[in-house]
Length: 376
Ligand code: GLY
Image (spheres, rainbow, N blue to C red):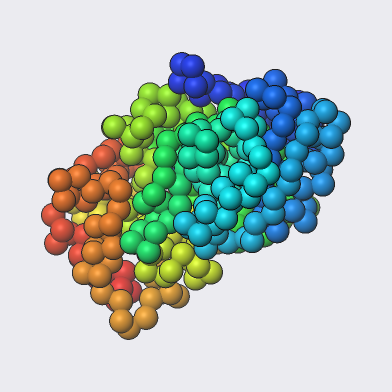
């Protein structure tokens, strides 16, 4: 185990914070967190899956650092990100007599991070929180940047707040206990950074991707570390420049306009995870870019082949049924937060590494892309 870690900074003035990336951070969590605590008093929140692997390790590190804590374990799964769980969790926090100086610690994947971050944003008008992401998706995307929130029947992440963590600890070692499907789903968000503005990184992933998502005995930890570090560096730069998504932060939604509609259609469940929806949505975004004469077929095929080669879904063939229609999917896209003046926002590509934001889209082209996927 390599205990050295890299440190990146998310530069947001008084709300700036560090992202620490390395191995063995869970074992040192108490010592690493202690300097950002107003008082050595925390509530550590995780889910049943992560409890099994890592809760004892983190609790031991808090004990060793002299930090008092209460642990709360949630049920796993996307259905935990709803109003009922916000009410239950905030109620537990108040019953525990937390104070404004109490820090919440989110130990887990994107669901735990988003829910705990949102509860931190609204409880006692704002508590500090620390992210300890244990999935690849959370390490490279959701734990960084302060987007917190819950899903609604009307759409994903529609209730929430920007609330930045005080610290992010991304322990690469935690990825060793991830189910392969979750690792692959997170990998879709890693690929995103290459496609947005870093063609060299995408080319590196074409060679190294299989070693990143390989099983623990054959995985290349240096490659994983490089992938997480490069992704977090890209995300930190975008968030520092546009914290509340007035402009360029929307680039991080590449594949998400299509993807969120697919997640909503399949009920945020086992059929399609967030990362899998993003993989299909990314291919759709490149299909649309090709249709509009913006992107070469060769680049679209490189993207599709790489995602498929890493075991990600790139079409609807295994999930759609005869009742699906393009108009219904477009309707679901209309529930997206990124609708402006009634127009859908898409992230399109002028080839790999040259993504851009637009809402100047002919819906007939979007319909054609979806129809192609629905009949493929
Ligand atoms: N996951 C997209 C963002 O943080 O902006």
